[in-house]
Image 1: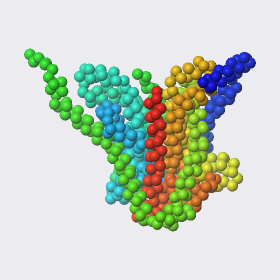
Image 2: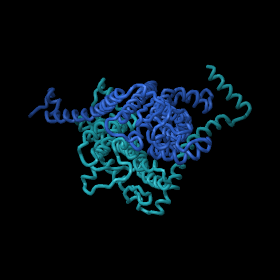
Image 3: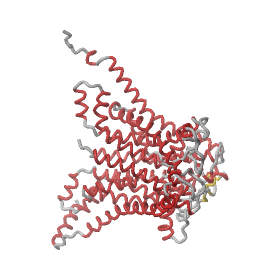
Image 4: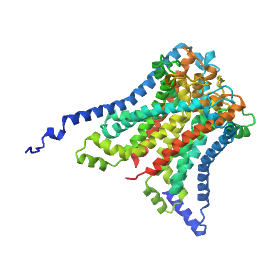
Length: 309
Length: 308
């Protein structure tokens, strides 16, 4: 009561004084705008700072930064092994986390009976999404690396165990975003399907999933981009810090030692030599290009297909 | 004429179709069960090694003068103090900036502004944490921390905390904006109808109505800040270990930073020594802390959803 009274009184006083400009309101909205601009400015500073350090490296060495292998000499080191590693990790994540995640989302949204088990699965998934990524690294170390410890020369510290660890890490994210996309499909569509005699799976496959595809795609691409930027779990499951010589055969690619773009960034960022500072920024530019393109693609996709039912 | 009398069997459909449906349902349930298996895997893989760590050391080692795992000094107060300092600094950045951004996006911004600004925040959220760690070390540390505090070191908890804070701004902004947007328009209209200004409506009507979601955003941000690893590993220094310190402008060790340096570099340890096992012990502590915070945050999130 008293709140409403003072508000009205204040406004009346304002208009009696013919002071229509609401000073406090303007200051408040300026503060709000400034804090939003603060984030945008930080993003700009970060990008410009990395470009200022990294672009000279590209100017000097051209694409050899991209095509050279890791090396302890900053003049010769490049990120090709990280590019290959990240690509393979992304492939493994896409092949495992995407199908399992989407199937789980379908179960939760379309099949699961409302009950204790369903609620437990639901809460469990949301908590998994909040587990720090470094803990997933420990899981990968204790399970995947231990299981594959006799495979290859890297004793289980290979892209397969790294990729499976990242897949487990983003699985909750894939499930949550896919479930949201499926939930947004109106039930009238399903009812129409059942009305013409379709079975539950037919309704899901022919009606629900195609309608939810843009949303699911957005979520999975965002999750993939998150996986591409993860460093901590890969360090724990044995991605190589420092240089290594890549094997020749295709099998070595999957079972030999590996690195990834963010792991290279971490390794180089720790080096004391000043030359590695610039090289780190060059690697960051490559990493940002990969993740920002993936992110931007997902956001574009969502804005384009954002459909109100 | 086979008159289609609707018997129960007929309505149930062909046996083959029913078999297929049952199969599909089994596959889907199996996929969902996997997430429960993963949770169990996390808990089991952590708990046994954590217990064998505690069994392998003397308890006073947990209260040593510092965190030097290779020398058998596993000071918990050191890493927990470091984690708390980083988290506090991060929240001092992320809470005001994130909440103000959320109020602006939800109450002040036109739909067009929102549509252009939100993707930028999402890109900020998508920046890999190791990149922010490098930024904290090479830009925030010299241009902010050392510019303000003359005695600050190149590696510092403050620089790491600021980096973690930047990383959590988008999280705070997006969850609390969702909460504010979920406040029914009728409440705002009632407030305007009483003659309230926009600032009054925002602060006295929308924010109190969305308080559960805002609290949830802050709790989840704390949990994220505690678990953030790479920013601390790059920018906080002390990879070889650290004495107990409360000095934010010097290097220090956190739970996650200690884990990263145990897995790499100077603390690199293999085999079954207690230094290696301490990795699991720290992971278990981290898991328990974030799990607790996430469960509490989840309760608050659900409370907002129920009310409207």
